Image 1 (spheres, each protein chain N blue to C red):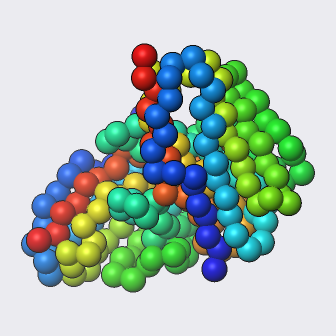
Image 2 (cartoon, rainbow over the protein chains, first blue to last red):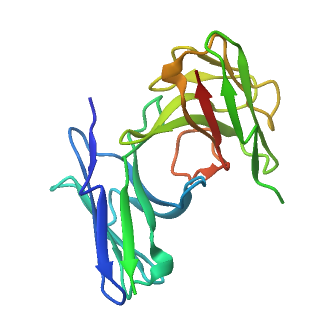
Length: 112
Length: 115
């Protein structure tokens, strides 16, 4: 069955640095991949979507890459700020009846 | 605009009791979803509905049922709650019903504890 792995449970970096989060998947490649942000006690909020035929997508300080050869997506936050501290989830669509599959998330902490 | 509302916010329930979690959206989205979120396991899809009048099973449907009588409401029922159903439940919706590229909008969640 399809598996999604996000690089680590937690990532702690200094304010101003670039945070890089990893999402790896096994087996067949999805049609598209999404990234969500989740704050404690709240529901996930959509950030970015990238399609299988796109290499890179940007939105303000966010950048997502999608490498179907490596079966990996990287999520970058440049010039990170303490307000970026949250859990980030990747989600993959395999165009199956069970819709999209979420990774377990990476908890990002940005220290001042 | 409220988006998606869920009720109750939290609930403690005795095992064996029946419980319905409510979900309402005001965006006129076609598709709706129920997920449970457990520590270390991420979000897992329980049931979904592509459009009013239709439902489908997700990854972990056992012990749960749903209905979609209209576009706005998508209640989730636990017929006889068990402790393993202790979790945080999220309802979500998306505009598309075809399973195509579409972001999901999530509700605030219901924290359910089954004793």
